[in-house]
Image (cartoon, rainbow, N blue to C red; front, side, top):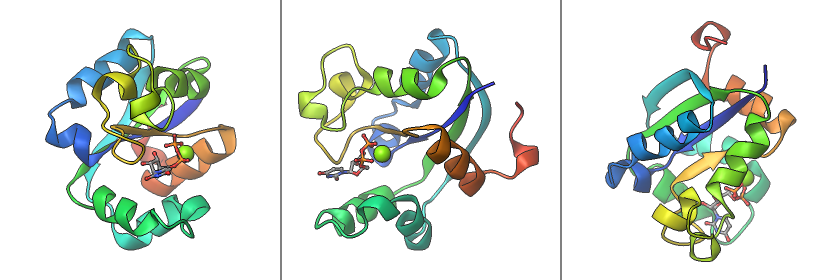
Amino acid sequence: MEKTLIILKPDCMEKRLAGAVLDRFQKAGFDIVAAKLTRLSPALLAEHYAHIADKPFFPALAKFMGSRPVLVAVLQGEGVIAKVRELLGPTDSSKAPKGTIRGDYGTDVSVNICHASDGPESAAAEIARFFKPDEVFA
Ligand code: UDP
Ligand code: MG
């Protein structure tokens, strides 16, 4: 069964929206098969955001993402990778339609509530980055 990795970002945790965001994923029919609270280190953020580590916004993004503990989870279900991205909406919260998670709760292009894997390869790599095999109850 398909799996994806999500991170409820510091703004989501600070606004106490973890339950509301997880509720959307669960109501869409997906199961939480792994979860933990963790504070992302600079080394882990450099690895997780390797595709944008050379961008001018990366230092601010890394500071934001490491600013407080985040909730990392694995969701499972048919078509979960694409469907979770659809539920999130586009990266820039200010352009995300109402009814999407980022459109309803996000702030801007950086502070946008939730990360989700963008394809099968990144999902596999990201799940392995955050969880040991026996921590995923697939
Ligand atoms: N980001 C940012 N400024 C930008 C683009 C992205 O701060 O101009 C941040 C934002 O938090 C985003 C993350 O970098 O969620 C990862 O970027 P990506 O392009 O992978 O977007 P996502 O997959 O999260 O929609
Ligand atoms: Mg991405």
